[in-house]
Image (cartoon, rainbow, N blue to C red):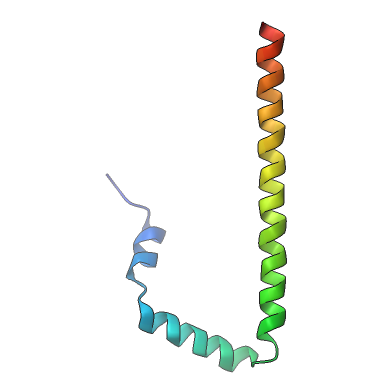
Length: 71
């Protein structure tokens, strides 16, 4: 079985690499800008989850309507 290359890359990232990335972000954006970035990221993730749930609800409603009409 073949694994996804993105999963392989994510599996190779260790603690040291994460610390280096976080330090680079801190240096690049500065300490005051990071909370704003995280707030925006949180809002984006929340909107994405809400949209996914909406699509799932629509699909389940459509499937249940389809099965009810066949009965």
